Image 1 (cartoon, rainbow, N blue to C red):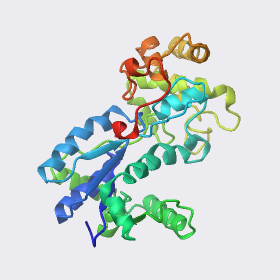
Image 2 (image 1 turned 60 degrees about the vertical axis):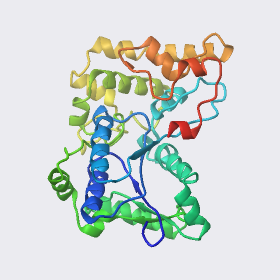
Image 3 (image 1 turned 90 degrees about the vertical axis):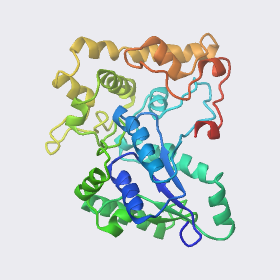
Image 4 (image 1 turned 135 degrees about the vertical axis):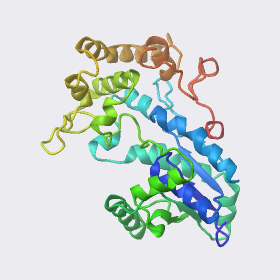
Amino acid sequence: MIDGRPLSVSYGLGVDSTAVLVGLVQRGIRPDLIMFADVGAEKESTYNYLPIINAYLAAHDFPQVTVVRYVPKRFKHWPPYYTLEENCLTNGTLPSISFGFSSCSQKWKQAPQHKFMQQWEPAIDAWAHGKKVLKAIGYDCSSRDTQRREKADRLITTYKDSNSEFYDYIYYLQVWGWDRDRCKLEIAAAGLPVPDKSSCFFRLAMKPDEVRALPQDKLYRIVLMEARAKPRLTKVEGLWRSSTKKNKKPGSMTEFIANEGLLQKDEIERIQEVPKQLIDFQRKYVVGSDHVPLGAFLHREFPQMYPKLPDGTNVVEVLFEQTSFDFEEAA
């Protein structure tokens, strides 16, 4: 608590947000909540960092990371889906950021965090007494993050931030004067490994070297996502939007994967036929001849691409119903 206001840290399992926690430990500022919104499509290195940071937090008597997820309740006539990736495959589209929008972040990250807050007693009590929750965001002192902070401030000033009545935002790294390099130094000095960049493995911000480093199953899934969306793409080429001389990479990650030889041509062509099977599965679901959620279908039919049954997809429980589990269980 700070001045009677609970302190929540929005944690992304990346360098900046990890540095926020390290800096808070250094200064003896204990947050009341540390929250990670999982879209179900982070790189494995990101998920592998969760037990590492939780052990560090426990050693300093800090709360453990609370994982929250957006859980759809209504699927119309479609098979249930539980991740951003499955959402895109269901609708035959790409994440909104590939089209220049940020609605996927609002839906899959901001919304579940706010919903959790609405059930969290310290937040409920603060709001009842006319106080806001302090929300720590990991923007560092780089020019890019300074611009992001300025944009966030403008949204609050113009009342376009729908949650601004509930939260006061605090940017500790900018208060402390920490840039990205300083963040890495402080994390290492705390005895922690420096985490990999946190992002969906198919996100626009993925750099060529990061795509090259992806395991084969993730490359398969990038090809599948672009193939499923391709019939509806008119203004962008793929997950990287459009080719430009400046970025020296194609707009399609699939084209990059093919050019780099990360997957063989016949493998790519085989995956590009999978959307037909997805559409056939959706049709079967509508008439009741197949009952499993989308994630279970993908795991069942394409284990090379989906070796693990996705979290939140309990085949036994949802075999004959379309509703997903409650938000509290997802958290």
